[in-house]
Length: 173
Image (cartoon, rainbow, N blue to C red; front, side, top):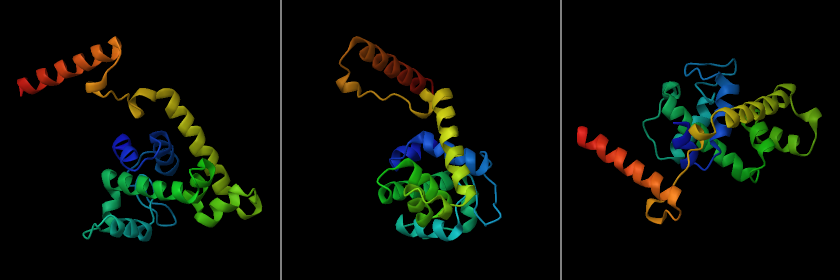
């Protein structure tokens, strides 16, 4: 789900994983003292706005405990913040935690206007990102090969192995 929705919403999957770890430690039923819910700790009003923008008319707050919905909405929100902060990672992370005003204050270096929680949060997410990148490079950032354009022998061999495996799997079904 992290890879799927990060790709769909053009978000670094390591950022998504770092946010999930920092927000909920991968607990889908997490609830914060501020009322944020689920893996990516979304505020219900923010999620309702995302549902409207995505054309989802049947959204209920309890849907935020569904990992797929939560990661879809959370990465959608990160994508929007990337647009606002011109993909500046620190601004995106700070704003995810404290809102756009806090994100802009963080970027301007006005730390007196940035809660300590947000300052720690930015460091936490970036540390988690680096660890996930170190430990799960292939799982969160799988290589992609356009089989029709595999140009070198290694890519052609891998493409052939993938096709053989898929065909073998499908014929056993």
